[in-house]
Length: 336
Image 1 (cartoon, rainbow, N blue to C red):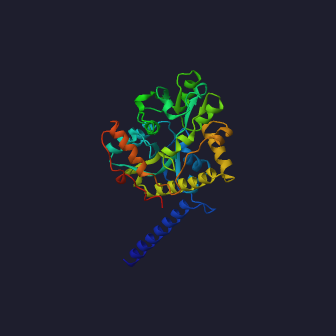
Image 2 (tube, helix red, strand yellow):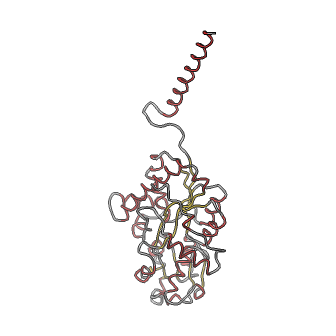
């Protein structure tokens, strides 16, 4: 009996030693580097400069440094990315402050806002041959004007701009086109003016197709930090993976800090961001350098007041079914 007890104890001790050794070997390489599989997240970026911070985190290796495997996918429309998020095909998306996004927040109780994405002062461009005829906001009346789809963040920005002169969307002829489509539309003179995101606005300018509308007439309409244009969304299911989300946002925050140094003109950050943007968006470095870059808040907290203003506009114009309490939808606990 004693021998049996000794044998059982010996086996238990042996199992503990073997298990500990396997855990150690699985977690550490001979060089001390962690070799267990990193948590993975599928994340939607954007096809314009609005997604630059996510791209910086990838190109600078910040995701890997923080032990997170990020599958970064560029998606042009929030309509597509938000649906993929709701269906579980994506874990985190950078989505616009649009009527569609608000409708998702209304219908999906599990949807949350987790960080600032980007803020902008909208860039209006005017067809070059009309530059002498469209000098003021009131001159936009009756014009064929491009904006990405009804109810988009740019659509709302245009409405705010027109309101300063007692005008509305009904006073223009809207054309709902994406940035890449605007190039051909201006070339063929199908449109007269529009709100176009960077770097496409500068690309059109350099091509000699448009001139940029005086930004001094636009800036006072929006908060000092710009219009809250885009934010990061996730579902409560994703947020249950706390360690993965924390690692992702640490990388995102580091990239935002790097970007803001570049925005302030510091080197080598500015040259590196220009290099990254040129590579990611397939445009010349000179175009990126001359573009109006988006603004990223230092604390990565979105402007809820500005979002509420957008929501109110969409509701009053029957573009969303109801208003939602945004404070209940904002979850910033992982920003640190």
